[in-house]
Amino acid sequence: QLGFAGDQGVEGHVVRSAAASGTEVRGRETLAGQLEALDGLSPAAQRRFLTTTLDEAVTLGAEIDAIIAAWRRGDTTALAAPLLADLAAEPEVYRRVVVARNDRFLAQVRQLAASGDDVLVVGGTLHLVGADGLIARLEAAGLRPRAVR
Image (tube, rainbow, N blue to C red; front, side, top):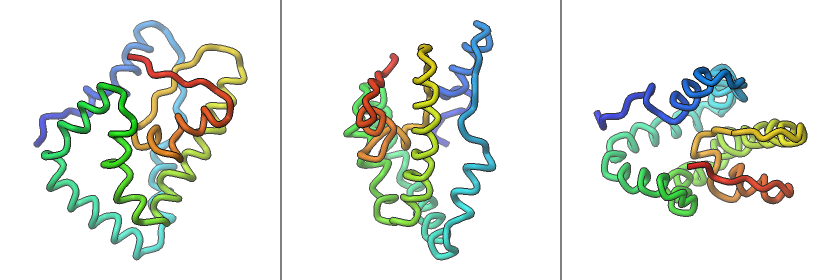
């Protein structure tokens, strides 16, 4: 309804570009892993998360322009508030959906960085922003992530 197409997103663009240039692409998380994060929530947390997601879908159109503008500027502070606010209000959801998955992503990215090769890591914005986001955690680990535009 908002005019976005899944195949036109950043991930699709990067995967197509990599395939065209013969660059290796490695997935860091499977669909099963994503669903496991949600399935492991208590039934009450699952209901609250679903209800919040449906409620947000109604108002997303009003917020999307500001979110896209912040994303284009690379303004992670402006992105953190709308993306993390509702999750932070649900500690169980926040721990499983954001923190636990970022723990796994951090370990994988550190392993890639240890190879000494230049690597491009593409991640969902939710996992890049905030104090528990990969950018802050990579910097705390002594790495120097940088945005590619």
